[in-house]
Length: 326
Image (cartoon, rainbow, N blue to C red; front, side):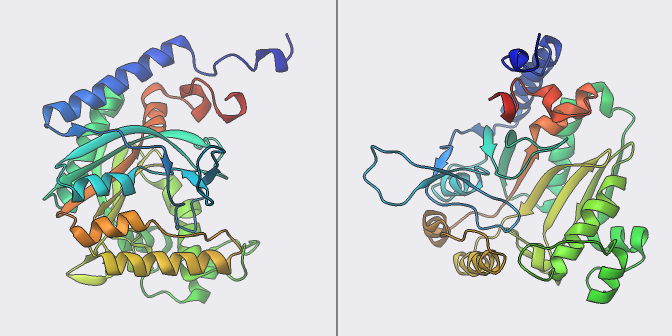
């Protein structure tokens, strides 16, 4: 049988598909016990993401009398925040998202997120809940894993011997391998920090542990609030386990004006890098102007979590059909 003839077949085994179904049921039971409402927002949205590291896929409908395109969502975050602003209360969603230029051992262009928002939660309370969910989905795999919480600054100081908040560009460059190609000209400070996190720090995190890295630099706040006790850092965390990033969480930014300013900065940076920079999501900004309740939210990569649960070395092992067989 040729490779071509086998492309119609799934890449996940029946046993893994059963484990996937069990994990999905586990997630729903986890939130049902906590009275968190499951919601289902559109995969087709009005605006692309502005983040320079994430790329939206464009969709056009020939029967829709609208000149501009739609986009496949890269996260349900904006729509879920519109629900929160309308008074939905605590909500969660299991959904497929799509991101261009993402393919590899831990990446597929289409993947599943578990995303949820908790009213009145602190960043620390949300980390507690993320860990509880991860342990339930992982099952026996998580039993020997210790819990670990490390600030972003402490991780850099421990592993690389620098303070990421004060280190010079020359110091950051010296820690890279030098043979780097940057799209859009010279790298920014955050480009270098992201590279060091991705290549030097992240792969060493979460060894036999569920490790949270928290309080990222303010320049990497994304949609998070700044820490009222230290404006140099944001109330943001990421979860790592066995060197793999599993989650990204925020104490959510509620200011419409600040969010608009961040979107405008992102669009300017996308233009500088030669990336498409179409527009920002005005519907989200309108919702924020109406008022977002105090909340914390997080997105967890379901497929990556399942990889750990079944001992998979490639994301294709837990997907029925990866992008090449879609």
